[in-house]
Length: 184
Image (cartoon, rainbow, N blue to C red; front, side, top):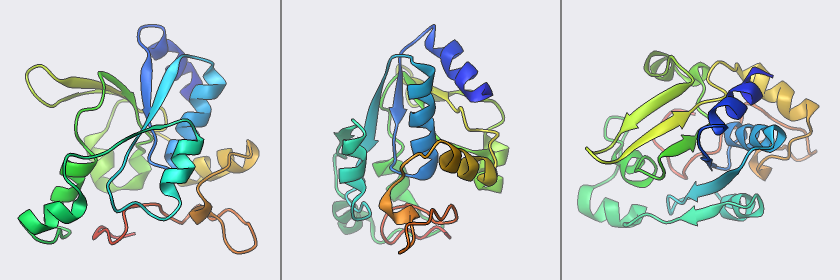
């Protein structure tokens, strides 16, 4: 698998932190890192409006939970409600600096915006003059069907939200913050 080759090559230079959101793409990245048998650690950024069961799920994977400086509700008191055009909550709660080497489950197929923004599986994101992150994106070129097929073939156990009442995996479901104004 090209993604495992990428992980192994990148991990020869540096130990990565896998940013685990609890979503299906993060679950696949975590599974690929384990398959690659390279050193890594796992973090989860709580947004304080996490879907039920998310914290329990990510902690069961070995993630260390990071809490934001201000909760979502504190941000609302200071800035008002977020909207599709004013998504300060993502910036404040999810996108802050974590580590110098970070692996993420970002895929170009998720949106037109992501397809334009991410063109290479390794990106350097600059936060300040002294803080930057080398982001590894092992799923960048994966399609929705690739994620679904991998999860089913390798029997990757995902967050409970991805399963219907009969236990069937539903790849079209999305795990996001409760009340997120982004279209699902």
